[in-house]
Amino acid sequence: MATIAFIGLGNMGGPMAANLFKAGHKVLGFDLVEASKATAKADGVGIADSAAASVKGADVVITMLPAGKHVVSVWTEIVSSIAKGATIIDCSTIDVDSARAAHTLASKAGLLSVDAPVSGGVGGAKGATLTFMCGGDARAFAAAKPVLEAMGKKIVHCGDPGAGQAAKICNNMILGISMIAVGEAFALAEKLGLSHQALFDVSSTSSGQCWALTSYCPVPGPVPASPANNGYKPGFASALMVKDLTLAQDAAKAAGAATPLGQHAQELYKAFDAAGHGGVDFSGIIQHVRAMAKS
Image (cartoon, rainbow, N blue to C red):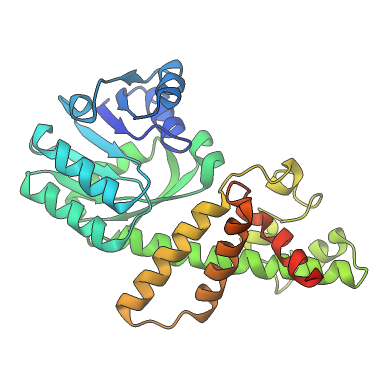
């Protein structure tokens, strides 16, 4: 079993660190938020006094932070305190340029590094069913994979440094677009007098089938585990979808790619967020779609 440092013990990082402890690893964590540290401690995670203190003696270091600037800042602070040859993994969702900059910091410090953003939301973090999209060389991926397997069900090596982030933002652009499409279809069905269950029964077994419909249906009833049946309490908050769609748009502009539906999805989620619904699950976008029809 490995000695693991985990920096960033929030809604995603906390359960992930707890699953590493359950798998038998020694886990020492750090977070700036006292409540997050307290929850992680209750789940068996040791708590360090600082990020730099948490990584001393660690075989593997994992970060789960809000944005690229935080990742680069924390990695700059800690790489000199990590033993050469150790592995450092970033599970945050950040821009590709920041991910590559972090890899460079690790390489200069003699560390193996992987960018490994996740898909699966809070439920996946708690249930250890996350998908990890990994970027980094083959040696680093091989070192990271056994640790990631304690937190997820599918571990994919997407390519060179930054490829994991590229895969994540492309995947979540698909997700954001498809959830809007599903929401629009249900909103139209309501206007036409078609029941939610009838539309679900047809579309879930025909050409309209997609994950946003069958796993995260945005209306109550058809999929009991979806947030729509729990007041749209977030598994993945709308504010986070805005973040990911913005990352996708920034990447598209930098790469010279045309993503008109991605751009429109970003605009709709930004409007939903601006209206005070950033803490609502992203499937709640159907509420915004319905409101647009009334305006």
